[in-house]
Image 1 (cartoon, helix red, strand yellow):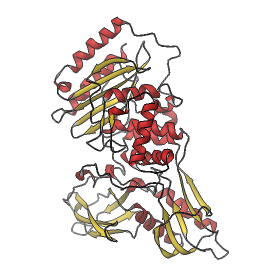
Image 2: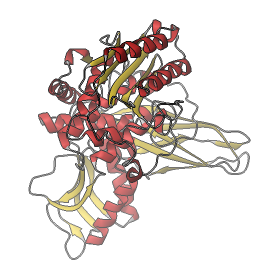
Image 3: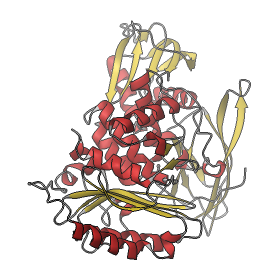
Image 4: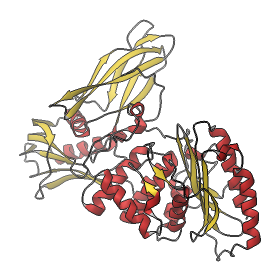
Length: 495
């Protein structure tokens, strides 16, 4: 594998532009106001004026070759169409589909469960007879801090030794951890992490690199500690930072599992402690290694080696953790363009609807949701939940109609508030709006040849409208596309 030079970064990386910190959810909840009275209908004169002004914006070179746009009113009635039915690569705007599907399948207050279970509680000596199961429920934001809390709860319950194996129940999801439709060069990045019912730290491992004196080897520690991670090589202390952490895939058990092996090289400047995050694979084995290491820290040991096994129905719950409410997970996913959350939710939807947590069952549930909302699934050919697959195709009008349909659903306010405020936060912070500032919430999408934006505008006289602006053109400059998108949003806000 080619060496990859890293920069210190957050544990999950948005596939869009960098985002600034967002205000607390409670503060964001009061931002978007719903018009108190029905909006007046669009007149012929208004529609003619809108189309003339948008044609002037989208008629330039930026949208001429590979651009498409669709605007619909809150009832899904077309207001503007520029090749809107054309199948386009949506990039991260595809997350709007899994967000709507998950919200309507689970409800905004749903919480994903993670637990430790056993056949019996510990005896007076702290012995748990038989195995201990760790049961994953697909929580996309389960962290090492949460896991440490669970092991601490076992310790307070009196658990000191398990005379059976540590078993991992990851049966809620099936299928490969890495999507085969993703580009190979993305697979070593945190934004293309694994998908598993047992997820930890968005399926990345943290490397803490502490320099010594110039010429000395830097100290490298991983968080959480984990015997299932093999770290080789070293990083020298020097006068500049060029740290390289490369994944080396080492097949185990006839190629069915991979040990997480990382090769260290490069240098770090003295006095410049850094953190790096790299994706891991074989999540059941990785999580088991973390549990074993954290258990030892609290004086809890296991007699047997870890393995995959479903928890029995008769098992007793020793610790139960509930995730954030789905509404908060969606907000985090859409504001920061979290690919991992989107992939976890896609399989969770599949498990909920079809009792099988695969990408295929999740996509089938999305198609059903689109039909329920009156959106043609023929305009929808996708392979993942995040939009990272370049082969994903969705028409702009399908995205716009999906958003409009959600505006009339029982979870309309939750869906709208989960979208970042354009020009103010998240991956859409760098858009520059004038008349539309404070009136637009939207999801951006960016890949090598894709610049997309889809969301909702609160117009001045006609209520809310939904839009999708997508450019699939390798020659298009993101900054120029953004200018055109912003001009269109300012225009829409004026009506």
